[in-house]
Each structure stands twice: as C-alpha cells, then as structure tokens.
Length: 359
Image 1 (cartoon, one colour):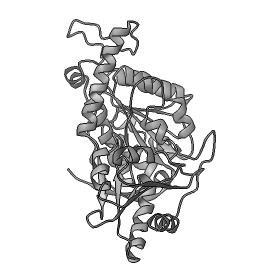
Image 2 (image 1 turned 30 degrees about the vertical axis):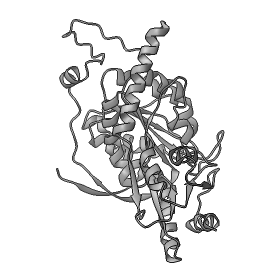
Image 3 (image 1 turned 180 degrees about the vertical axis):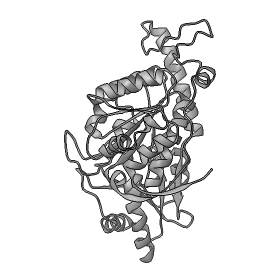
C-alpha cells in the first residue's frame, strides 16, 4: 500500500485518518483546542469523494446522539471535542456502552475544572478511563504521544470498537492536538457496504429483512436479572480486553533503578528528562501507557517491581498515580509530579522532582 508524507497538526491528522480509513460519518461541535478536526473535514469535503458524512451539530449533546444512531446501524462513526464538551457527552457514551455499540470519541483535553482554560492538560484521565457517565462501563482509551499516533489511533480505535462493541476514546491534549509534525498517511480505504455490514454486524439495525427479525437497539432493560445478565456479558468483554489489548512502551528500563510512568505529552517531556538524568548518572527509564484503559497493569507491576522508586508524571493533580500504585502495591514507593490548570511542565522541572525522589 502506497504511503504519503504530510505535514499537519495533530487535530488535522485525526480528521485525515478518518477520511482515509473509511469512516462513514463525523458529527461534532467546535471547541478549542480541537476545532481543527471539524475545520479540516469541512475543508476537505469528503462527502464528495469517499461519501463520508460530515456534520456540525447544534451541540455536543446532539453530536454524541448522532453517533449513537450511526453506530446502531453498524457504521463507523465518530466525534471529537475538548473537556467541557466531552463532559456533555457522558450520558450518550453510557447509552452507547449499554447498547454495546462501536464508536470513536476524541477528547483533546484542556485545563479545568469548569470552563477553565484553552491551554493543554491531562485532567480528564478519571472521566475517560473510569467511564464518566452512569453505570458499570468503561471506555477503551488510547493515549497518543505524537501526531503520527493521532493518525494511527483512529483506525486502531475503530478496530477495537468493533472488536469489543464498545465506545473507544482517543485521549489527547492541546499539545498533541496543536503541534505540527510529519505524518505518513495511507491510501484511501473503501467504506463498508451495506451487504458487508449485514453479514458482519448481525446486531446492527440495517433495515434489511434477510433474517426475518426486527433488530431493536437499546440500552433499556426493566427486569433486574436480565440487566444483570447484560452487565455480566459486558464485564466479561472488559476482562477479555484487559487480557488481550493492554498496550505500552518501555524505554531504557533494562538497567534502570528508577522509573517514570507518563503518557501523551507528559511522556514526551519525560523522555528529555531521562536524557538529562542519565547524563548525571541517574539510571531512569520510562513506561508509557498507550492504553490508559485497559491500563498496562502487568507491565507496570513487572517493570516497576524492579525499581527503587517510581515517579508518575502527569499534567494534572495526580490521577494516573492511583493506577500505578494499584499495579505495584506496597512493594515500591510511588510519587507524583504534575503541573495543572493548563501549565506545561518542563524537563528540568521533572528532573528536579526526580532528584528529590532519589535522595
């Protein structure tokens, strides 16, 4: 398959990947710092080339429910937003998870709480990885650390969404969304035909009557025991996802005595910290979770268990640190360093926190 090199922002890479991977529809609403996703789609007008529907909805509430409708028909549909808008989508995401439908939602995080700032943050970790809406559900969550991963994770997100019939989130931030880098893009892939969906998505409400059955898509079940059985099926699906699709990257951990755990933009910053620390004789490595849920618990436990101490580096007040502590238990001390409210930490600040921990 031919590749093409492009220079683009992370938000543009999301949009370009959607067009090229055969996405059927995007429904969204502009909000800084992710508005370029919708702007790029509108400028490219894929509905004239691939047939992809692009619609600016009247609100985030409308956009997530349009995604719900498209997903119920077996279509590859998605939305994107930033923190306050993502909050408005939580009820719809719970409905999509309860109906066991595949969908993709991108959150380019900004500082909060409240309306906060338009500057980058990682303060939506709890809301995304723990399932910010009501009920016992999870969002499979991918954390890109580059513009290339912003592009790659769109198709991966759809693959995981359909594999587990569950919504998938790409949890980015304003740094990755706005930074411009080189990206290798793929050839255009065809959208699925209705015949393909009818054959491969037997749960979808396609309008076809080949099975002789009406397909009802809903997350409503009034009988408690039946609802419990649905939850049992969903939880079993999540256990399978934890076993098969927890992803991470380990860098310079072989001889390390100390470990940094960081994702996304914080991981990029921490990579420079590792370079500076090793120049001063501090042996430190990094584990970068690629899936925030399922969290790479086994990898953090195995690698972290060999360390003297662990530093969780986050652009928030300390959210991922809970998962790091659960992974290593009481065997290894875990400390946190973070800046929040939209402030981006520097490699030197992370190095100073690492030195304090090492003492």
